[in-house]
Image (tube, rainbow over all chains, first blue to last red; front, side):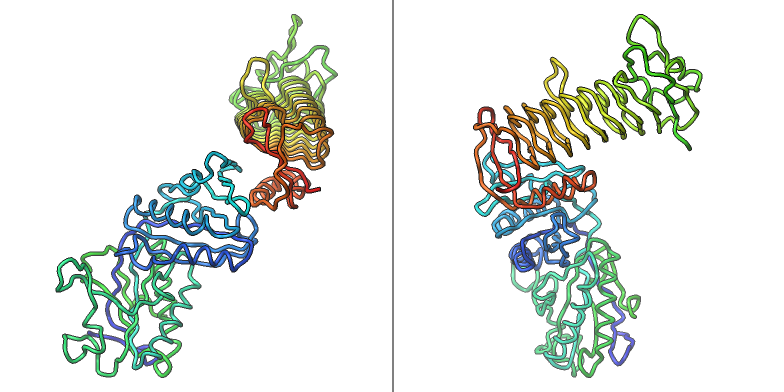
Length: 303
Length: 270
């Protein structure tokens, strides 16, 4: 694969291929930072990939009290799915089981506009068994549902965007597992500073990148053997002898621009760390360009 | 562009119906045509030009210089633009308004904001009885918008309120929020007897309690409500004084249990 080198790190002349998705955002608040984070963490558990989780979700940012609707500490969560119906189902199940239940929580729309609306409190309010109260404040409407520690306040609806993109990615390759992880962590940390994106895998990082298809019936994806360092000598590997570890960062964004911005920030962080302490090479995953509408060429995103 | 200005010549000799003097009714009319608009309510014909000196200006921004207790139905039915009255007004100011901003720089008579559906009505002085309430035979009162009275309000403020906000910075007379269907009524100072009489839903906030609260409201104890924080930040854009009263632990009374009972009175904790 033709490549160029920046600060001693080889950059593959390739692109990340990403897909159109449906996405929404909510803001969760609580009496303390800890409980806002707890509700969001619980709600975004088991939400790494639409392949088996139904949605991809993660905390996008921590919101200081002065930015939240109720003036309490909050976090903004983004959630991505392949259809509006699935996004609605995941949203109401996750908010109902994980945010409603979390002590002191409240839940608000995290998008101000979009092509459509999703039910938020409108789906949860029935928990109030007739004691729920609606309160309209200007253009926004909230439900107050009595619960055992007071009231769960939840905005009626949130917006949905059809312009979201899922599957932006960077593949980080290094000479050891620890250096590769350091470089990938640095990239994720930089990407967390970009608005409107999440990296849904554990800590933002996937070690089990997959290829489409499998030798086994019924499995739609399987291990990405050309990138597995332990198979370097056994398969048609893309790894050179010095590569001993490969990690992937998957990025979902509310807009294509946000995904590109996150990839740019991640690349810059990896390049800044340099090959001695971090990665030797950076690539990206694609399917030949035929499956996804969005292509992010690494050479266009270099610092 | 300066506002279209109506300057009061002398105190009117009869009650006036000023409801024609709203933006959408004046659009496209010349000053001469506006001066010919009938505003009288008796057999003696009175036109706008008899009462006011009219000065050319923006039809969407109306200024009435001077006021009188006989100025009835100011801004009635307005849907856009602004009207400012520099003085008192009579009955039904802003009745059925659906948008725009009406400011009364003096006192307003009974039924101000009656049945209003949207927009903002700002009364800088006191308001008469049945603020925002329905007229006889009507089933609902105010159903949207924000009504802000900076002084006191008379009896039955917010009668049959359906939606929207009524913010009274001063005192309210007896039966405030009677028969409320929903919506929010906030009273900064003490309310008279029996606030929320037969209310079914909605929120009444009493900044300094009431002279008598009905025993048909059930005490639900003191709470730090997230909803009160949302109410405070919304109300703050209209009244910092009232907003601050929401920013404290509040006692919740559920009622009126003699009716549907899904409403509430909130007041500062004891």
